[in-house]
Image (cartoon, rainbow, N blue to C red; front, top):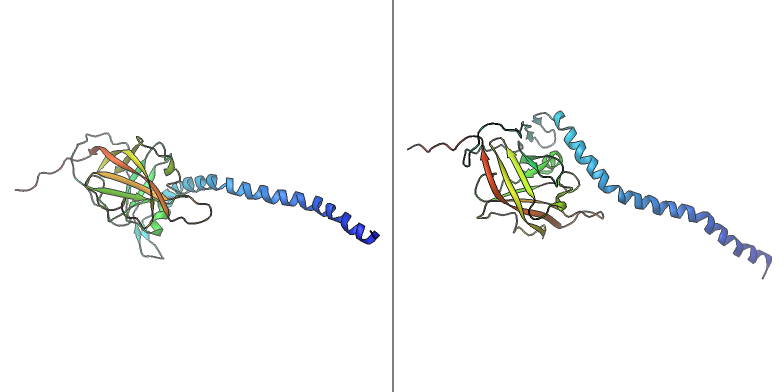
Length: 231
């Protein structure tokens, strides 16, 4: 073997020794980035809620949508009733707060759904019924913000939806998974239920799968009694 060829071969291990630390560092950075996805999502959720006080009623420059921020009383001390009057909100209005131990934070719920409202909180589909009405109340939110912990909810968990006109307590009946083209769980129903859903979390990009829970209405607490119809 010539001296030149021998020197060429002996340089290969040296290159490997030099490159190995850089390769290991790149792998560590990649693993750390993936591991930080969930904490970053958490920070975004709390940041969104922290800045809710700075959001004012106004018209969006992009869509013309009027977003109304209302005060929702979660500590009602007065008398409540099993049947009462429902106050119908306007599109884009903060209409309720959604609470559950598994969701960890009180989630603002807006009436109607579009991309702008989903940046502010969860959205109650205007094609579904209001809390207290007969049928299926459907609420969705982004998996990387307000519904980041929706996959933690299990059968038997309690969900409370507090509106301007009353408080409604639900219990999770079942967990669901469905394709985004499947309308089975988000259409009308004969029973009084609350359906919560979001996209299935996928670090590789948007997913066509949806996950969620179906909750049965357990109790209604209206702040004002139902008025008698005029004869």
